[in-house]
Image (cartoon, rainbow, N blue to C red):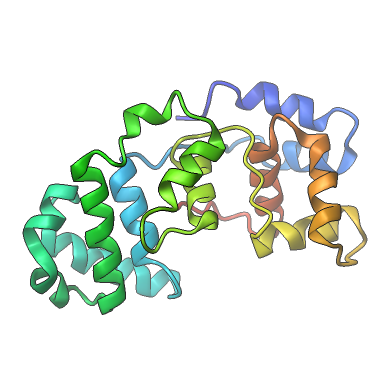
Length: 205
């Protein structure tokens, strides 16, 4: 389901910004939507690291078949040996086991995130092996639907800003960070539209 803030954010981003207004109009029939369960979303992000989308889908299918319903308890029950036949690297098996342990022990508790800041959730998520800042930011945008995440380490976002606002000229991260201030408090939404500019096909994380 599209976030309740989506229409307001789109209108405000389009006001006084012709480049963004054109994107808002072009992609008016689609919007951001949550992928669902926090654990399976994070597990899928780990499975897909550093491999193609096609390969990631194949490995995820095998992984899901191995564990059944993708829950922390199911991953723990499968164990290291059970996950070894799913097409996962040893490192990803260790990452998934660590992620399951964080959920099962309560060190990661999604219900608590509703009262936490973006930075607080990022700090908590990046304590898990295999989850870096970029993955945490993708999770906040695509699962938690946080409205003001600006993932400047994302190469696609950088490229879109260069092309739309700087005539294709590369800029420093410092300049891009300052430029993004114009899109507060809707930087997640601006990021989504800029990604669509590069690739109209919706991407889920």
